[in-house]
Length: 162
Image (tube, rainbow, N blue to C red):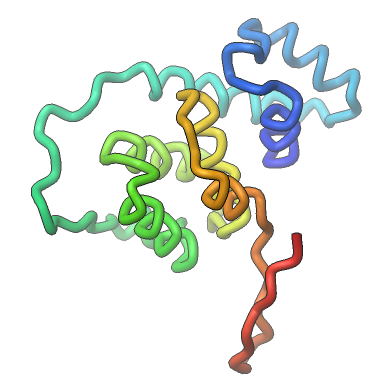
């Protein structure tokens, strides 16, 4: 399903250009060669994104210096790299409180038991894509960069390959 989301981002410059009708989108994705089960998961996920993105912002903004505490369920599903990346995006001013919660909600909507950093970056990208948010080129580059897996039990410096 993540491959379909990346394909949609690369194919359609913005979410409004993507077909709204699920049947039409499913036909286009099937014609490109995606599996039916993945197509249905992606269409349901996108429907949830569109619905959640249309919700109003929270009434009370977070106070200065406040932090987001994750539930046990969120903690188990979002790996440490994903949680750290979310904090980085918020500190850098890329996302606000509403987008942060939308990203978390959509990440938890994935069928996987744990959301990796690579998957999480795609979720962030899709939320920003859906909302036509302007993103700094360096942040966009970071979102489009795959994570480099670390070897177990060794400390090494990871080099990102573009």
